[in-house]
Amino acid sequence: DDVIIVPGQCKSAINTGFEDLYFGSWKQYEQNNINWLLNQGETDSYETGPHVDVTLGTDEGYYVYIETSPPTKPGDKAILVSEFIDPVAQGSSSCFALWYFMYGDDVGELSVWLNDTVTGMRVLKNITGEQGFFWFPLYLSIDNANEFRIAIQGVVSLLEN
Image (cartoon, rainbow, N blue to C red; front, top):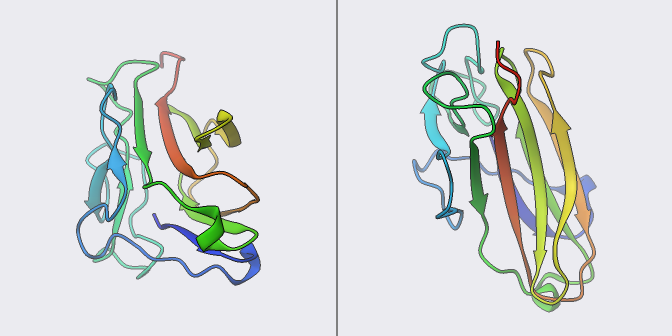
């Protein structure tokens, strides 16, 4: 639902949402099989996804999600990437925070990656499979000396239901 990168420790992270109806500085990765979708209220798929967002806690709020029901195929990926972040401007550490909701038959995987301009990509967090009908917070402290960006990847389940 909400994603943000802020200077400092994760304990004091402030989340912002998609209430402005666009992805902000986040971009769809050009080689996606599928895209992240902006949504309000329930998803189109029966018995999947949230009924409300986290920011407003109502069906008037917005969030992003990937559709994992057909016609998507097992293994299809959607990736959002942040702008590049200068660690000097951010201070000694940054906090990445998001809320996630992983419910439904074809839920696969949610991964958060760090793309360091010197050392390359590395996984910061990987969550697999259905997690229940709840929004869960995820806070990740990032200590990185080089310029970096964050990628959020959603993958359709590899298991056929």
